[in-house]
Image (tube, rainbow, N blue to C red; front, top):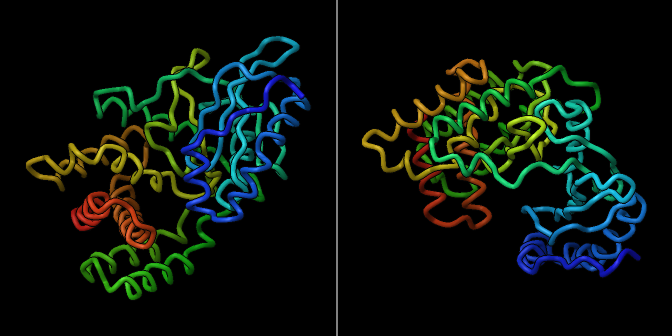
Length: 304
């Protein structure tokens, strides 16, 4: 073994069990031994305390043979995490952290360590959205075969929108849900073979010395770059909700993103509206805080 086994953060363990049940508990029990095995295999030693995201832990490390700083990331085995290393491999450090090693069976990667700050630290929202948009443009590259095409999910998305609306008692006005279904039907099948991030929000963009900003935590989706517009609205809800004209404020932020990302403003609006409907349904189904659900519903209506 390499020193003391890692300590799994208590809040991460608690959240994993709440979300995944006994399967999550069983996985957590193996995590210290798994991390130790990967540290030995990739010749690394822990350098700082373990941190975490929603579905995985991050161990800051140094590679023994050259003292290179890196991070060991181990994610809970979930379909949404499968293609993260594929995206990093395609980008090869261009606008995203570099992938040093991967173990797909264990959902583990050894990644370049970026800085500690993120776009969430940038107070000027327009500046932060512009940086994210420009980064989205850089990450939008031709996708290889084997990655999930969002265009193949159109029928499933449409059914989910209808089913969730019915099962949840139609919490949103019919015209709002109809607009989301229209977007999925009309834009869903008309998407380029372009690799996109899929979850581009402020805390997934880190400061770095190699490049000013580097992306982390991609989904590895293939589709429309305008699809990422919703996360940059939900990252900072409060200024939108308290603006004299929330709809105008949301459209303005979308325009900043669309222009920086070089995507069509109308496509960005329609994807953001459709994804806001989906997010509102998900929040109701899974117990998001009431204010988040109401804010997401208001956003979906404003963008309709």
